[in-house]
Image (cartoon, rainbow, N blue to C red; front, top):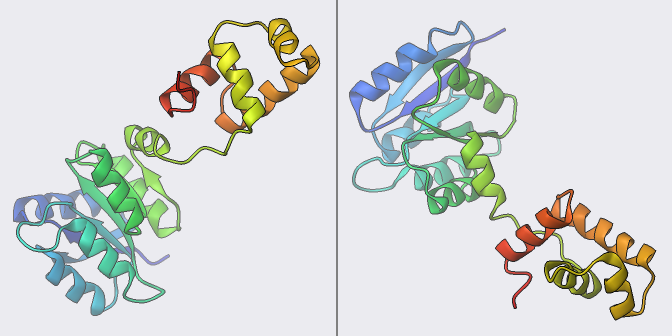
Length: 208
C-alpha cells in the first residue's frame, strides 16, 4: 500500500518541521512537500503527487487557509483533500472552512496519533472534526421544519401542560398529542420533552 502523500501548509518553519516529524512516524504517511503561504500551496498541489493537504488558517499576509482551501478544491475533480489544523476555533472560522470544502477541522492540541488517523480518514474520503468543533458545527445546521401543530404543542409543553391538558385545549386526543410529540422529537433529534423545549428555545422556535 502506497504511503499517503501530504502537503504541510504553515507560515512557521518550525511548525512545519514538527508536523513533518510527527506525521512521518507513521509508515503510512509521507510528507512530500511544504508551503509557507497559499501561493506556494497552490503551486505544490498543481505539481501533482499530493493526496492530503494539512492547512493552517493563518498564513500571514494575503490569502488565508480558507481561501487557499477553496482554490485547491476548485483546481480539478481529483483535487487533494484538505484538513484544517489550527489554533482558532471560532464558529465563523469553522463554517468558512467547511463551506470552502475542507474535509476536516482539527486543533493544534490534537494528539499525534489522532492527527495521523485523521489524515488517513481524510484520504479515505471521510469527514474529520474535533469533538468540540463537531458539536458547534451541528448547532448551525438547519433543523427539519416542524409543523404548525407540532410547534403549538411544544409551546404548551414549554408552559408546563400535560398531554391530557394539551389534548383538551386543542380538541384532540391524548394519543394524537403523543404522536405529534414523537414526530417533533425525531425531527429535533431529542428523547424527552425537556430536551425538545430546550433545543426549540435555543433555535428560536418558541418565541414568547
